[in-house]
Amino acid sequence: FLDRDGVLILERGDYNYQKEHAQINTNILPLLKKAIEKGYKLIVITNQGGIEKKRYGQKEVEMIHNLIRLEFDKEHIKFDDFFYCVHHSSLSQCLCRKPDSLMLEKALYLHQIDPLLSRMIGDKLTDVQAAEKLGIKAEQIPPNKTVACVDSFL
Picture 1: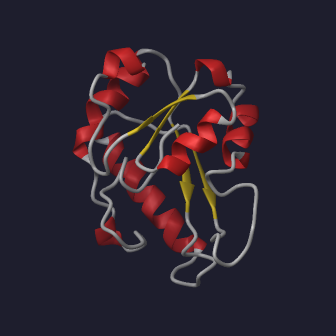
Picture 2: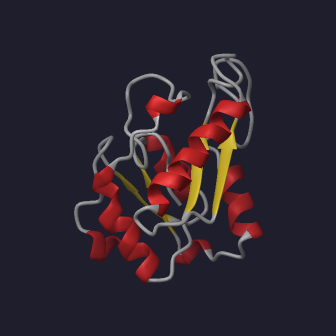
């Protein structure tokens, strides 16, 4: 499981919703290639609270996800699914927004994944908290970086 902003694409300190915001974090490529070699599915789990804040819509989120697919496909990296929460904690409460775990629970169920054999990579504590609620091993990385020791994590 992968967070989007700061892990797959560069964290810019504001919402990523325009085409030019989809700048690939090339530091993550070796980890994703190794994960694929080891048989992991690649599933994106991302909070997109800018939707509820009316900064952008689902159309923009899907456009960014399509650009991510296209760019990573050039590196022979394919994503199995994308899950996103449209809520923002300042406006409403939900069970899908990380640090809650509903997006992960849905992904585990739909893709028949064992949480104890899974990994989560995020750049925020909320990513780690959501994963750990389900027994998923998680790694918090600095934004726009990668896991320092790939082999021991996977």
